[in-house]
Length: 259
Image (cartoon, rainbow, N blue to C red; front, side, top):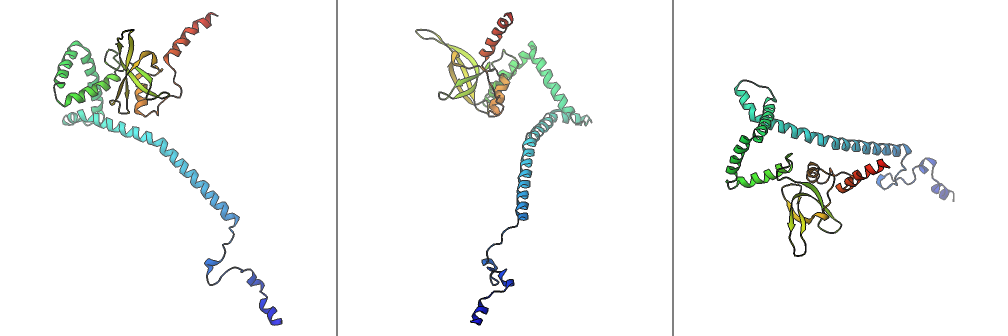
């Protein structure tokens, strides 16, 4: 009986290692993690998330700046390349001089074309270009785009920014009013507007004939409308109001002042 009691008794030093398999430590149960290690892991996680968030914020801020700088630098070098070889032959090596000369050249071309002689020369050159098989299509497409943003209102440019109901009820599409037409019917005539709804390429789109009364004319300029379409709607203002609302507000102002 004494031998059995001695065999079943476990020393205190062995009792601390109960559950630990000396032959295979992997089978032993995991030790409880200390509070210090849990706090350290939480701090590392918070620090990692904070660093990644700030890094992404920096990328978002610097990306448009880098793209703008790259395109501007490329444009300056591209325009500067037109007249810089001429200055190199003359022995003048000043960066940016060709760019300034190109801008002055474009300005004087605009002044020359505005005169009657320049308009005549331009008409002859345009007549020659329109007789070329492939070049005339490129010229007509680029001319329509330049006419859309032209400050001259006498050209065949986009007249107004329009919002039409398309393609289903409850959905709207941005477009540009290019012209107006009268549809003659037996009962009465209907005034229609030709609305060009482009894609983000601006020179590709669809043409719709919409009743002038069903067109929403927002308080947006032609350039703002082009920016909205080219950017995919990212430059869309938060609030858009039709022009009729501003006209009604202007009419109410004198009445309020008189009262």
